[in-house]
Image: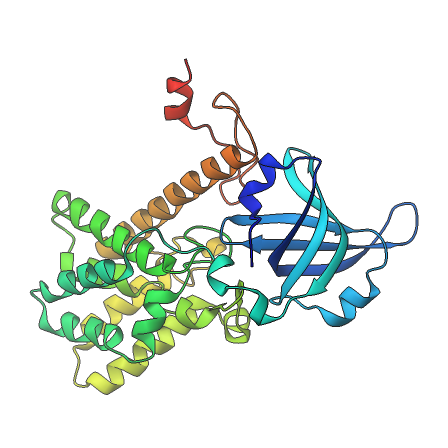
Amino acid sequence: MKDFFVADAVKFENEMVTGYFALSSLSVRDRKQGGRYLALTLSDKTGSFDARMWEEFADVVSTCSEGCYVKVQGQISKYQGKFQITLQKLRSAAESEVDPADFLPATRYDVEAMWSELRGYVSAFANGDLQRLVFAFLDDEIIGPAFQAAPAAKVLHHAWLGGLLEHVVTLVRVCLATAPFYPEVDPDLLVTGAILHDIGKVRELHWKSSFGYTLEGQMIGHISIAQGMLREKLEALAPFPDKLRVLVEHMILSHHGKYEFGSPKLPMTPEAILLSALDDLEAKMQTVRSEFGKAALNGKGADQMTDWVRSMERPLLNSQAFLKED
């Protein structure tokens, strides 16, 4: 069973280790000096790191694939400020050798408590039509369980089991705290958008041994998937006010805020504008937390910036840790 995790790398620098991991990616690459090597990403519930195998990897390529479990032996080292492992041995691991709970990160919050909290917000709606609509999703025997289990992303914010629910519950809290400052905003409509804006991710992503995109997710994307799911539910709920349909659908289509971020429409209602801004804020702040955790894992001091965060186009500084350092 698993006794070495990615987070343990800092304690084993320049040492040989043996352990089990999920194989998140695998590719054969050309070496600058000639020949080829195997580049891999290995992951478990504590994170992921790069792996390299320089020799005798033909059997690995023929017997292992992305998403499978592997047993490896190799040396931990640091390259460009990040831990990695140089492999001497790698083989496919049988499911009897591993506990799936060791490999996928999960929310640190109680899923049942978050689910009950979310349903409580919907029960408090004054608008009965929006209440019917949201409960049609939450009570769905396929969508409901998937909503509770799904990550919110493959690698960005809330990329862990229960991450989608955690993101949505936090976003709803922020929406309800913010809405009173803007009388132009209908709170029930805003919260409906917050709950349903990422519902397409239950079909965009898969989360068995690793996180990744389904074929539907790659070909269509969660925004368009959500639009289709919404129309399916509305057809079953008919009659449903068409004006409300347009407003809810618009929030889903515009919640990324900009065309270049994947939104087919720009936010054009008070609820859509506020939802887009708060969704972006909530995702960014979770990314900040995750990057601070990665920096600590890689041994960075409180006075050091994180690595470059591609999604935010900047490095970050943990101001609280920086101020406490003295």
